[in-house]
Amino acid sequence: MEEIRLIEVKEEILSDNKDLADGLRKRLSRNGVFVMNLMSSPGGGKTSLILRTIRAMKDDFRIGVIEGDIDSMVDAETVVREGVSAVQLRTGGFCHLDVPMVTSALDAMDLESLDFVIIENIGNLVCPAEFDTGAHLNAMILSVPEGDDKPLKYPLMFTVCDVLLINKIDYLKYGEEFDLKAVKERALNLNPEMKIIEISCKTGEGIYEWIDWLGDKIVS
Amino acid sequence: MHELPVTESILNIALKHARAHNVERIVNISLRIGELSDLVNEWVQHYFDYLSKDTIAEGAKLDIERSPVVFRCDGCEKSFQVDIKKIKEVICPDCGGKKNTLISGREYYIKNIAVI
Image 1 (cartoon, each protein chain N blue to C red):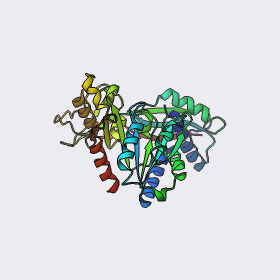
Image 2: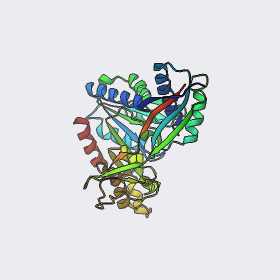
Image 3: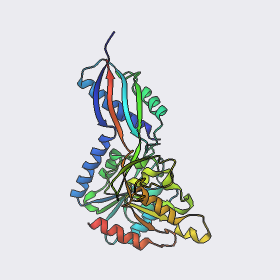
Image 4: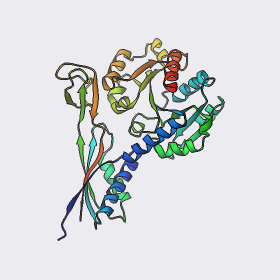
């Protein structure tokens, strides 16, 4: 009988993507392009936040948007109407964006003419958390109607993001049951370094604080 | 939900090491995956069976060991394990500190492969 032997592998499964992500980050930094990866559940307000951000920042920065979507072009069309360049990535069923996908979108953009690129990741709080996109900043939205238990249910997402935007904060006025204090505690509990900003893309509340904070990150 | 790309990566890494050692067949792959990952073991095996057809890894069994979620207290620097799916708050059992940093529970790691 043939003998079974063990070969030590000791390799990270996602190391390929991680290495590619580090390489991409360096390349983008050399080109003077700052990239933000935006994640949330479907309907959390990613596209609305992107529109708000573009309107507030397009005089100061040349902005491009990568729209990740499973199978539509709707978001890219909305963003282009704001006068910025956008590339739609249709993942054809994939639940997250990874570095090769982001790279193919960046290759379709003129990076020389951009300062700031926003990646709108696929809407879900599970898969995008696992895959580094090569962005400099990870941002997530949790909207009030989703509930205050989300840090408990999707802890990984809260550990990988630099900033948490609590969106649809205007809903609290209508008596939505959402324990703001508990959400902040739970998020900081998982990630003490996390910046938390309350916003409403509808009323504009908190948007200036967000733009100020983000602007500092882009220029630093 | 993202078992497919992860499984593809497992297969490619295993095949790369098998080629380097000139082996006939891979019979087992030992993995360590952090508790924070939502991967479902059965699905990883299903995808693996599908992807590994007609390769030297066809029929190989995946042994998946789950590594616990461990935090380190920013205050007293003691490390402690938590069951993140059950608890509501991460608190240092030693000093009651609420500022804690995740130090393990996210790994996706191939330990070794058993080959003939």
